[in-house]
Amino acid sequence: MKIGIPQSLLYAYYYPFWKTYFEEIGFEVVTTPMTTKGIIDKGVKGSVPEICVPIKVYIGHVLTLLEQDVDYIFAPRFVSIEKGQFFCPKFMGLPDMLRHSFKNIEEKLISPTIQSHSDNIAVPSKNYKIFEEKFNISSKLNQSALEKAEKVWFKFREYSRKGYSALEAADIALGNCTEEEYNHEPKENMEVTIGLVGYVYNIYDTFISMDIYNRLKEMGVKVRTFEMLPEDLLKASLKNMPKTMFWTFSDKLLAAGYHFYQDDQVDGLVHVTAFGCGPDSMLGKLLEVDSEEYNKPFMTVRVDEHTGENHLQTRIEAFVDMIKRKKMKVKRGA
Image (cartoon, rainbow, N blue to C red; front, top):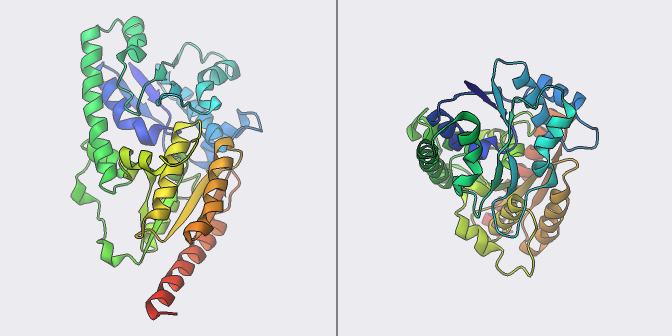
């Protein structure tokens, strides 16, 4: 049997886990290609106009899977992976949105409810009972598959914290390549370090973000993202806040932003946000307001299905050049 996984939303964070788990229980995993204009166009046509671009992109990927020879489509209902915090309502309602938007999709959808106390979604195992019931898989096989998937995901997180991008870390963790195959320049050869703040489905979708991560690296910039930071460090960055945000990944980004502000090695922040994202409207404003207090440059890159590539290139080039000039003045004692 073939199960399709859309290369969108939390794919960049959980694909190593999902691929390992499904292969262990006997599925062949099929993924959509990276986002293209054609996929976005499908999503736009199949969505209500008011919804944010990441959901439009996800719907485009689901529609692409419907055109492929897959038996099932994996569309989990993410509810919570942190006590007292939740996912965006669009994540929680995504399976229902798909069911009520497209005919004949119900029989192909597999939508387990994901509720956990941490971003290690291997536990509790009851989240995956649906596979035992639907496919007559034994509890022993299911538990074994979850344990193997968990180990691979822990490896993925370990490589992320070493400074590899989510996509690089996934390749290494899944055994598709070695660490040596990714040529990471030594720190001393990079003049500028930028904290790139954004959800994985914005930053690592090269069409949505216009590949901002690699564009910065090609400009000789060392790029750091939230998943490269240890979890305890992220939590420590928010410990003095009287109240945090309601959304887990928004909190992670906020924590990463404040850590980057306080890190002398980071020269500036770039926040990549999708037009129409409710949580980001608060997150981005908090980081923007506090950039003056920390005296570090901050730039917002707001993307949607109409964002122009040349516009982005000009802005990030100017931002990096400004930081370089600022550092040069400091060296000269100006």
